[in-house]
Amino acid sequence: MKLKLTNSYLFLFLKKNVMEIFKRSYHINPIDTQERINGILNQQISEAERQDYYRQILGMIDLTTLEGSDNNERIIQLCRQARNYHDITRNVPDVAAVCVYPPFVALAKKQLNGTNIQVASVAGAFPSGQSPLEVKLAEIEFAIGQGADEIDMVISRGKFLEKDFQTVFNEIVAIKKLCSDVHLKVILETGELQSLENIRRASDIAIEAGADFIKTSTGKIQPAATTDAFIIMLDAIKTHFETTGKKIGIKPAGGISEPGQAITYYLLVKNVLSDDWLNPGLFRFGASRLATKLLDQIK
Image (cartoon, rainbow, N blue to C red):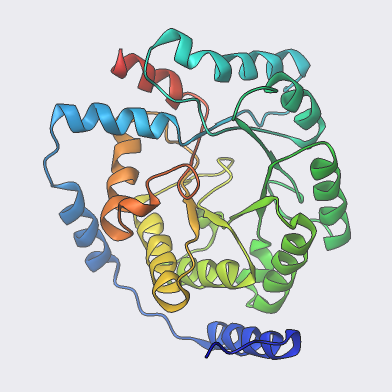
């Protein structure tokens, strides 16, 4: 017989889980982590497999422009680029999404009408996260009202490093509630979290708070995406799946511009999580130049 959880019981269950995450001690050995990564990446892949991976990765890209100089012409050009890849090379998928700032969501939505390409928007005081929650929610509400299919938010790293984990958790919960059915990607900005233990704790908090995806970086600082941070995030997703049966997505972003780099992250997902995650519903790349270079390799 299934146990029916009331809202109050579910709240207490989640609260207990979250408090345990806040207090949990994490011990992650960087040398062991790197050895795991090396063991996965040392496997040989054939040229046929490589070509198949390139095609799959193209369909996982969030084609992105997030510059202060972005304007309507740039967004129209990016959307045209996203729509035309399969015209340039046969038997390749569309990219998964186009990712823009909130003022350009409606324009991108119009340009991509009639395709399966999603419109993602960074919102909620991206990239710093340094705004009051009310301001973050207002920006996210605007982006959703403009037609965003997905929201990429960033956690408050300052609060996290102060060990104010409750505020970090509460903000994600509030934003997820506002997003409702709009997919929420939670950016950890791993390059600012200082340790692998912090990256694991931030991953667990984001997942418990309702993230549909966890994402490495904004792409605005260095280091951005790194394999050691990424595999720790994969471990958090795997543990959550084994405990709850729920699959959480993953998105490396920042500095991934070469096809070989993308295959590195692809192989990590394949080996740590399984082939079940190798689809745009659970695996994305944040990139601006990667798609064109993949097409060059495919051609």
